[in-house]
Figure 1 (cartoon, rainbow, N blue to C red):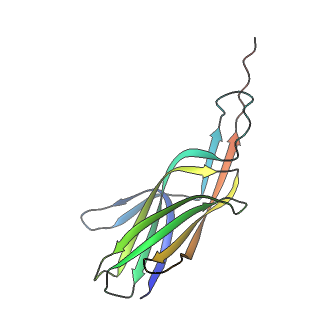
Figure 2 (cartoon, helix red, strand yellow):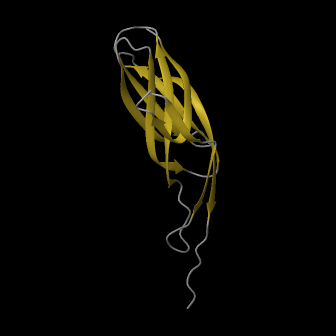
Figure 3 (spheres, one colour):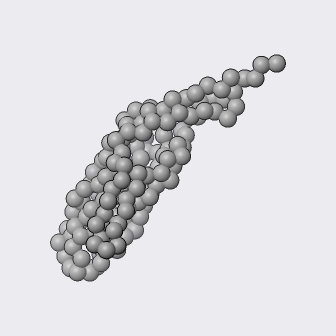
Length: 154
């Protein structure tokens, strides 16, 4: 049996119309800009911060069988130096007699280390397989500005 990844998109949100099952992708993401202000003056810059930013990873899959299949989709955020920052694994059932499947992963908060070109790596594993196989990487540019808080003067 073969499961094929057709496409994946990073977006702010997706909406599925209940009348005709058409999906709308809202706010396709190419880059994110954020300013981070420390809580206290003279606070050292952290190695990793989480930006309060919600987004979705929407993917479209096909299979060449009429059997029901359980799949695992692993999504990983990769920083500009290639370090894995966050992983999420979602189990889905590809129903019997269905050849197409959409997956939507809602992500709350974006973990980042610094400004640069990040990627979201998507891997697939059919339940009975031993390892995940990489299917795509989605690029996203992150620009972070660290604002300085000034110590109160006496």
